[in-house]
Length: 357
Ligand SMILES: *[C@@H]1O[C@H](CO)[C@@H](O)[C@H](O)[C@H]1NC(C)=O
Ligand SMILES: *[C@@H]1O[C@H](CO)[C@@H](O)[C@H](O)[C@H]1NC(C)=O
Ligand SMILES: *[C@@H]1O[C@H](CO)[C@@H](O)[C@H](O)[C@H]1NC(C)=O
Ligand SMILES: *[C@@H]1O[C@H](CO)[C@@H](O)[C@H](O)[C@H]1NC(C)=O
Image (cartoon, helix red, strand yellow):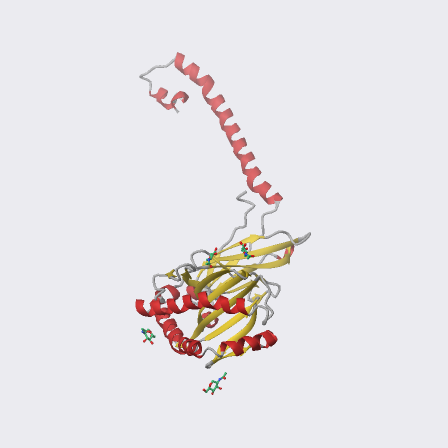
């Protein structure tokens, strides 16, 4: 089977710049999803994320945050974290009753989901004012801007009614305003600083080629796998020389459990045109040198035959020839030799007993 596998070479060539690898915007988000099953049954699930990395979990019974990274507390003191925890918990306990009490007025239908997202972004080390949005059944309902709630266009009259009610809670609006303009940006910057070593690590991709399921008679699906790289931005292209192959299909960038990423890029080509194609990978961890993997035609059955059978036949022939040679040289002379052996004769030492081989 070894002969059937594709042989690949990884050759490092000088490559272009990595300007598109620089990650400009990093966002921090707290998400709370409340599922309303019936008038007396709701379920809360909360978490916090730095882009796609989960930094915090949330125990919906005690209201305690769990810190999933060693640096998840950023530079906040335990007192300040507990204050945020308390706010979050109070909201998670109280807000469901608002929806339950307005089911008819807002035309809500059990079962339904309400999602809250609160967060802020960092752009080249500057944190923006945060945002807070609420969605009903997966589509935007209302958002908080400046100091009040605003309806989302797709929220219709329901969104208007929700805003009217929420804007009557002046104390809550002040708290939210402070969270968005002060706590969130400050926390994000502290978090990015505390997690710097982890977030700015560079992990080189591993790459290999394989053939995918055949797209049709006489065609090949070439697949370039790029795995275990970090950070996420990566540029990969099937090439013929310096020519990018337009038919390259990019898969989704998928997460590994350790926070690194996986991507596959495929190209559907005529089997006869596969030779000379290569997969080129550009990533910040490669220090400006692209990784290039060349497609080697899988050996045809004829070649396998030549490569495996011919040496076997030759070996068998050689073995046979040696055996015959041994028989003719040793069998008869030996018996003859033994009968007329003279230990003092120097000539006898030129013959060796084959049994001692
Ligand atoms: C509400 O939903 C829960 C879970 O589906 C169920 O166990 C409970 O009996 C329901 N209660 C009512 C009053 O329908
Ligand atoms: C808490 O979340 C779990 C799932 O993560 C769920 O099974 C449970 O019902 C939730 N409890 C409450 C009180 O929301
Ligand atoms: C927010 O308020 C400021 C002044 O307080 C105003 O200049 C700005 O336009 C407001 N933004 C929005 C989106 O309402
Ligand atoms: C945490 O770091 C941020 C950004 O460097 C800073 O503004 C803030 O004062 C620090 N301390 C606290 C307690 O937020």
